Length: 363
Image (cartoon, one colour):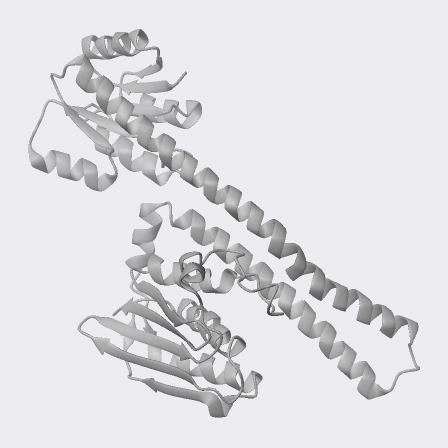
């Protein structure tokens, strides 16, 4: 049975709503003002809130604002009740995150229809979230053990060999094995950081207030220097500096240098990883009005339409055909970072020939 919190300072209206809901098999919680209602919402976690707009101590706007700022109450559906019908009131409530609006006086069936619609919508959203969690759990169970166990086995095996053969191996052999252990450790470290970053972004993506804070923080980056530095470093590490071509105009974009570098790192690293030596990697960037358009182009494996549609965490394509490192998180992290900052991210590809990553960032 669903529980509905009624926040209403007028006794008669509060009792009428409670009676209507009881007759429709809902459990109810009641509060005489906004402060009481806010505490009940935090402590009892109702399935839906019906809240009067004009109340003493804390009005409906204040209740809604504080609900949306608390992670435990941020997604609770809320229906405003008000005696005022001006559009400015409706608009302000919706901007703050209200789910619906009823003007007093209202008929019982209008109230019940609004409640049913909001609860059905929340149920669908909950089902979608659960499906995403199920898909993520399944993908993790197939990919993550391999990504952790492979470098761990290298670390354990090589370190054990160094211990057993202590003093018997040449310095060059010792150094080679130590380098392999170091690389395996770096691989696990990157995987851990990517996992934590992805988890953080998934939480942020469901919080409008945090998204707004990211987009309005005023931090900017010099796109040309940041991307060039990342691209040259990856090309040198891949011994493919001659394959790299960069044509980027100078501009500033609304994203921190660390986040911009992370986006560039994941996309450019994939471009080198999934293309052969002596094939070009092109990076092109230019401004259009108040946006910066960035293209990373490689002439490697490419992606099918299905693979592009299914880009997601821990989805690594062609594992049975191609031996490769990576959890599949990098591409999704880049996509999420771009979108959280108000940009656009798209993939165009010709399978077996070419992949173009297009990124649009705000200036």
